[in-house]
Length: 352
Ligand SMILES: Cc1ncc(COP(=O)(O)O)c(C=O)c1O
Picture: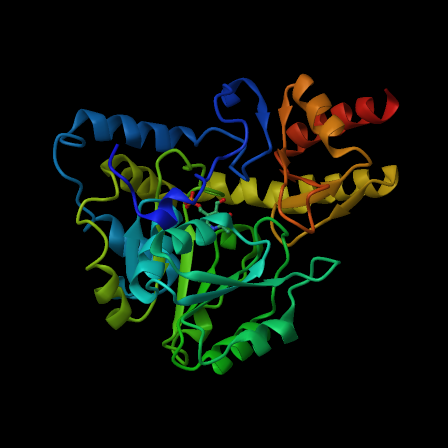
């Protein structure tokens, strides 16, 4: 067999939880997805994409880009679409990192960053979250040095859920100077918090976002990055011309044209379901880290037993493996009804 590069041979693949299981048969609270099907008008748009010259042609983005630019409140030349925000992350890392270079990130963070840095042969300088899982502000600022090639800020972070204030992000951008800083805003629709206002003063800022979470489109793979027109022009050299499929832009266009359903979902999750879940765990004396978005880390007395019990009850959550959080599972809130179903199952677990 031909030999791959030794640093690739030494790596492990990124394997999502419950691989090989028919997740559609479960209440899925394990991957921070939208827990509902896409709304009917999105399904209709997808069907019409199949009916017209939707999939035999290479995809076109010129109808969708103005809609996304209006939604994101930036110029079209400040956006690059990507195949999930995973690909935006890959494009940015490939633009700024080479073998032996250093990426700075608070840990635990989103593992795709480590994976892509590993493929490139770059080093990851991880600064651990503190014991309460707060962002390690001072240590992180101190860690930005002349040897840093790229800074990653995940706001709010997955898996910890921790967030940073915009003034902290400004401090990081300021200290970074010409070093690029990614602000991963995969959960922007849930928090409403964005570093966008800093973009005009800090051309080293690059924001990534996704349609996988609030927009209920994880299976279609659409994300995007926002940066200065100059950086976006560079990123286009890395991405393939047709990497984002026609169905993804059709569905996303429909979500942006009629945002009623996804916005109502976000309101239900953040104003009803997540507070319900927090009250439930507080009342039951179960330790949890609430986080800023729609998901949280939960630390039962016996994590593996709790996860297995929930699975028997038809509910998937995600056992975490990173240091600091290896006794927790991560779960997202569903609708209020789904979240109550979870609470009933967890109550059964506590009563067993
Ligand atoms: C922080 C963060 N960034 C990026 C992603 C990637 O999302 P996608 O590639 O589906 O857009 C995720 C997905 O879980 C995430 O949590």
